[in-house]
Length: 137
Length: 96
Image 1 (cartoon, rainbow over the protein chains, first blue to last red):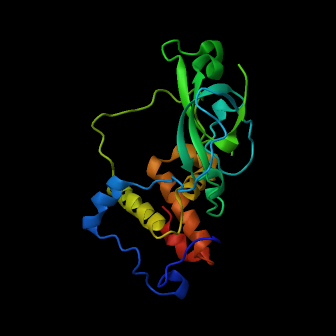
Image 2: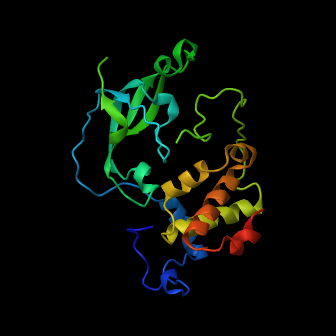
Image 3: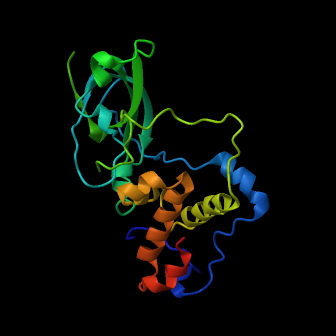
C-alpha cells in the first residue's frame, strides 16, 4: 500500500492507534456525510454535454466500473459531474488518476437490441474519461 | 475484470427481490460487518475501490451462493490478510 499516509501513532509502530476513534455519538453524522471521491484538481473536460461517445471495449483483469453491457456501445454525454478519482487505479495501490466523470445516455435498443423494453427507451451509465472515445452518430 | 459480479443483462436470476419494509440488517452480524468496513476504510487501511475489487476476486460459485454482507466480509478479511497477517493461521478462526 505505497503512497498511503500513515498515522503518527498507528499500527506501523506496533501500537494501538488512537487516531481514528469513531465514538457511537459520531456515527449518525459520519454516515449522513458519507465519503466523496471527488478530486480537488483543476482539469479541463475532454468531452462536452451533447457529444456522441463510444464506450471502450476494455477487457483487463483489474478493477473497473465500466459495466460489460455498455462496452463498444455508442451514447450521448448527458452530464459532466466534474473531477473524481478513478476506481480502476484506486483499487490497485491508491493511485488517484483524477478525471472527469460523465453520465452517458444510451438508447435501450443500442444496449439490448430488438428485445429492448419499449417502456424504458433510455438507460444511463456513468463514464470516466479513460473509458470513452469520441464517436459519431 | 469480466467477473460474475458484473451481472447487468444476465438472464435466469428471476426478479429482483425487494421488500419495502426491509430492515438495514437482517441479522446482527451484518451490522457488525458494516461497522468493520467503516473502521478499515476510516483508518485508511483500505479504500472503497479496493473493497469492491476484493469482492470481485471471490470464487464465482461462492460469490453467487452467499449473502450480500458475506461479500463484504470476504473482501475485508482478504485485505487484512494481505496487509497485516504474514501468517494467515492467525486469521483462521475468523472464517465462517
